[in-house]
Length: 74
Image 1 (tube, rainbow, N blue to C red):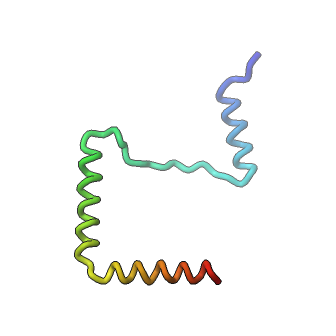
Image 2 (cartoon, rainbow, N blue to C red):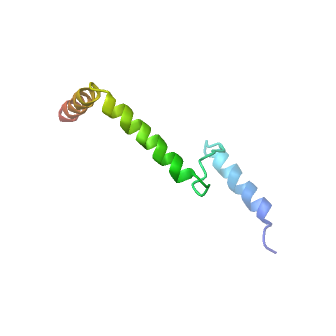
Image 3 (spheres, rainbow, N blue to C red):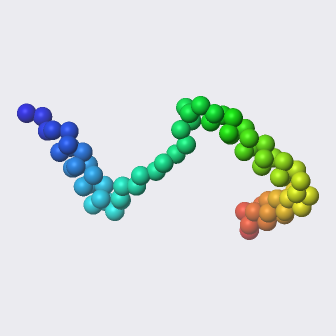
């Protein structure tokens, strides 16, 4: 007789817990929702506009990249 699904699931969860893991519930945006793409576009445009308005951002990013390159070479 096959093991019921609930028992198999519980056995798997117990094994994961014994391995030091714990279950976590994560909520993510529903990409199928009406208006999702429009909201992504709106937020992307807002970020792009903010980046374009920040004159110091390019210099900051270049300095950060150079710093990473120097650490990788060390």
